[in-house]
Image 1 (tube, rainbow, N blue to C red):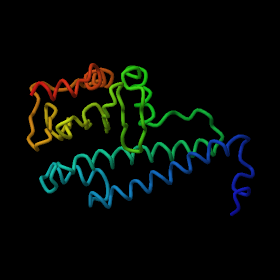
Image 2: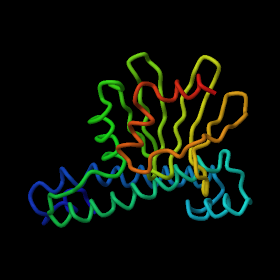
Image 3: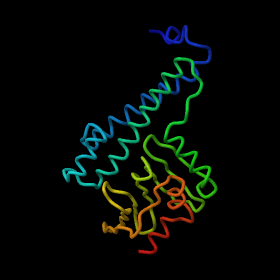
Length: 204
């Protein structure tokens, strides 16, 4: 079918909305395939079950789980948005990843003026040039990675854990004494205000 034939008969203006959504749907499908090959599991649920059962090590299994789950959620949202666009509906909401970026920009845009939105993560660059990579599926399922002069640090929430886990560059790990905030705005403040990762690294 020719491109012009596909758009014939659709409500006016639909093409401009459909094309980027179609491209995003394709990109997300391909990203999901790549992650599936990397993790060795067909979907995020299967990978999480394997981590919980002890059949898959949490490193890097949990990071793959978050990435696969976020991409799957973005793909589902994009498919729904594409269906609404084809039907001529204009009220297409931001995807969860886009909404997360808006929330970070609203609350912490001054501290992290440069933000790069990926299919499965957000890369935030602070005023000092420090970069943070955030994968956030929910306030209870997330992983934050950042680099300091001594190497890469990470903070995350493993399944069943009551408090976040801090991973040091030397491979050692520490469970924090208190849980992270359970609500998204408070969690973002806790993670991103006043260089919280740097303070965590300096304090342990």
